[in-house]
Figure 1 (tube, rainbow, N blue to C red):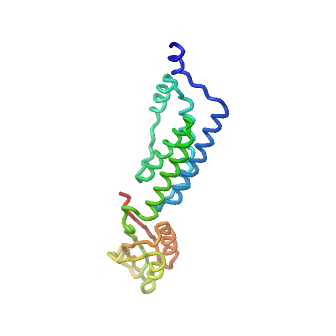
Figure 2 (cartoon, helix red, strand yellow):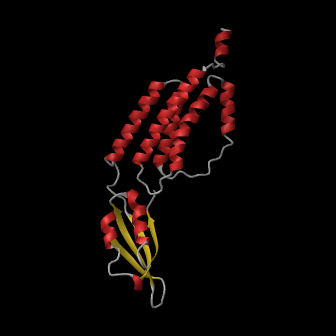
Figure 3 (cartoon, one colour):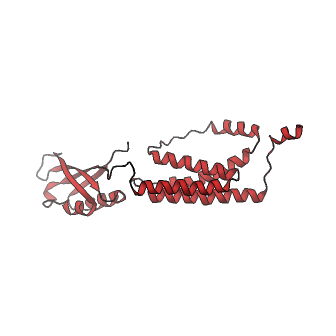
Length: 224
C-alpha cells in the first residue's frame, strides 16, 4: 500500500524512451510547421513562428517528461512558468490554434502515446488543409486598400492598370487626393483591390514602387 502511494510521486523513464519521445515530437512538430506554412494566406509570414511551432512541440514533451507523476515537480513547474510574460500579441486566431495544436501533440508524445500524437497530427492537420483549400466559411477573397503617392507630372495615363491586371481579380479607384500645390504636384490614389493570390501582395507593392514618379505605396487589410 505504501509502495503504491510512493509510486504516484515517482516517475522513471529510460534514455531510449526519452529519445523516442523527443523524436516523435520532432517529427510531429515538423509536420505541424509544414501545414502552417502551406496553409498560411496572410502577408506577414513569420519564419521564426514556424520554427517556434517545432520547438514548442519538443519543449512540451520535455516538460511532461520532467514532471512525470511527481506532484511536487508539477507545482514547481507551474510556479516557474507563472513568472514568464509573453509580450507578443497573437492577432490571428489560426496562430493561436497552431500553438495549442503543438502543445497537445507535445503532451501526447511526452506520455508515450505515440499513436495519438501521429494520428492527431495527421487528422487535425488534414482537416485544416481541406478547410483552407476549399475556403470553408471564408469569403472568396478579402478586400484590400492600396494607397499610392506619386508625382503626377511623371506619371503616364492609367499607369497602374497593367499591374492591377497581373495581380488583381478586380480593382476600384475610391479616392484621389492632392497633397501639394506645385507644378509637379503630389497626388494620393486610393484603390480597393481583390488579389488573385494574397501572398503576391508584396510583389504588387514592389512593382508599383519601381514605377517612375511613384513616391510611396501602402497596402492595408483588416486583420479582424
